[in-house]
Image (cartoon, rainbow, N blue to C red; front, top):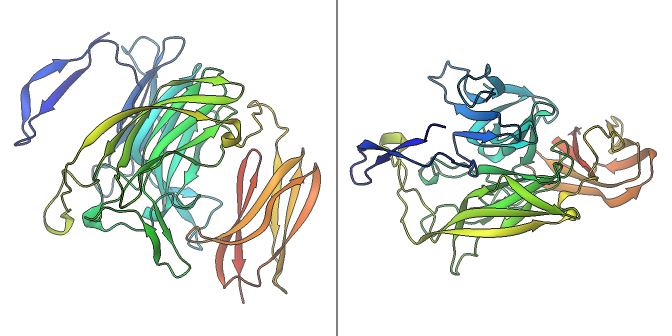
Length: 409
């Protein structure tokens, strides 16, 4: 194996040093890499995933790619386009019209046996408030597994341009860990925290005195090899404002986690910064950004146990269709009453919420009720909803289904 070569940069004047430094031959892919990552399968084949930047505004080849090598890196397969360019997104219609999705530059790669798993950041409609985490395998394709504001305080609605960190989005640096049972998968990621009220005013915006966002580390898990995903959960919180605060950033998980009785032991490292801020890329002119203080940065190791309830999944095998569910929304044009029809192949717990275009909960028709297998109809009264576009979110044991709801007066 050829050693990895890296150039160092002088922090004083930004110049690249003339000499190259060779690291050791065995470099494990236990970091989220940022722009590119390499990993090795059990058979020895190599996989590489990377983000390609656009050359200019007319270049639609930007996005995430994947390739494999069966001869230790001598030759590589044609690149697979995981998510390239800005692509139509079916099913949400957040703005009342067709949505688009594009990939972000933070990504990670790990193998489940011989199957590559790639996680990366994404964005809907190129809007900050719809940043997300995505997951891809050759079998499942690319899917959104975390969406901003899916949980209160997860992600941002807006951040002033001069306060944004150029290397980190409002959701950033997802990192993968595969269970040694070859079934469980966990993705950890960092995210800022903002919540707003019904009028769109911030009720909580966790920022430093200088106005920079604090990050914390979240996780999301799958117990069936990445087919279905549970709800996001907090792995490491920031410390509250007014205390000995720290911004929790740059998580990196071990490629493999130990699973015992459905619980996943996640070895994780992350960096904590006493005061968050912009350290470089301050720019000039219209793109100028504030420079934040560099204060007490430290690195931490944590073993976090993801319990079975955090996966919220049936742990069905990938070829097990017993958890299938059909969801249909039937609006009523003559009254405020609508109905959701569920066809369940097996008994499951159902939770139904109505959210608006900003992801805020507006109604909660069903709060975790157990339904038997069969066809069920759930009545929804939209009388309290203002005219506009909403989504009906149906959570069940194996995942989440969304259906659009239009309220017209």
